[in-house]
Image (cartoon, rainbow, N blue to C red; front, side, top):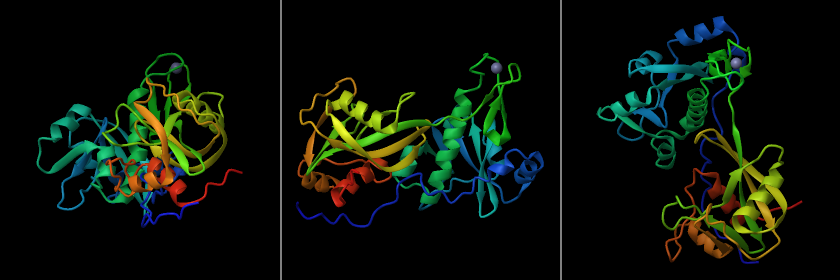
Length: 316
Ligand SMILES: [Zn+2]
């Protein structure tokens, strides 16, 4: 086996390791919630559809507003309680998307999507997990205004963590959609693919939604076979990452490939092929002779790929 390359310090996985205490027990306590809403230390993230509003600053921008500042930006809908930061309440406020769009014209704000914020480091990294929480939860509200059981308009309750139907009494909870994201490997080689929407030269892990009634390991094997025709045996869990585009949970795995021939599903992928460990190391270091690269360090794909390059994957 070739010596493992030195890839430098490990960057942080985006949207994870939240410093916020979700304090879920406060959600059902009306008096406690009212006290949190009037706490002068309370701050809110402002989300307008896919956009997040930031206060422009010289270095990193400031993503937090007081509740009254947030509500003065335009028409707002839901306010959800995200949790406590050093005992101070933190909320997320949904701003009408056209109102968020209109703020782009104002010099004191930066209005952009959460991917760009994470990839370009536009805010302190500690804001990314609660921003992911707020954006995923507010997106769920935006897309679930009506009861899926009877069709009546539903009402947000419990500080935004449930919607109740006044007509049929059904209770609806925020959804999270599990996605498997995996690297098929065989000794010194792995399979990477390219989606049609990737920027030129970027290659990444394969990924797909877990289906109802399906185990994570089975989803990894099915998706790998569907997308690239490779048969996998054992699957090893690596780590997970919330991915609020709109409400996914990425479940990162390595998969033991036991066949060689790649058959690409062109409806899913632009391309896929085997890469050597050496070639992938050059991509991670941004030193590939043809300019090929891996995804940015905020994404779990970078970490799944890097773990295979740096360490032995244990298929027990
Ligand atoms: Zn209903």
